Image (cartoon, rainbow, N blue to C red; front, side, top):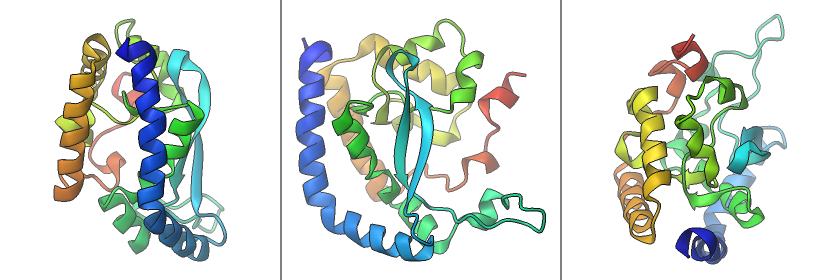
Length: 202
């Protein structure tokens, strides 16, 4: 019952309440990033959701579009702005994903939606992560986030799917709040601490 109905009901209610409570922060970050990023405060990218259906994830844009003399984007570390670093450290960049939750693309809690190009690199067991809606936070995020290796991270995603329950979601939500407050396991530029999944499994 929880998986089929109540979880979605909670997603909708909590997202509406969350957007209302966080609206002052949302508006402030929106105005600042609109100015700093030349009218482009949001970052959109296709990600696979439930049953691998593609959707566009929405986040606040924490990097600018600076390029080198050949027109190629500069490394992430050079494009991450001070304001962008702040919104990442405080997880404010995740607020727009509440819109994804309301639309039904995502859930508050579930396996994080990863890059489309990773789809060919999952094992049959790891593909179970796409049998539920992806989440803003998840079991892997409260157990190391970007500080654990890919095999462990994807196994945690599958364990979440296999043990999905109201109790587990409440536990993850509580641990997420604690991690945000303590700024625990936050990696500003993930590519500097771990390789991409496709490179890891080549």
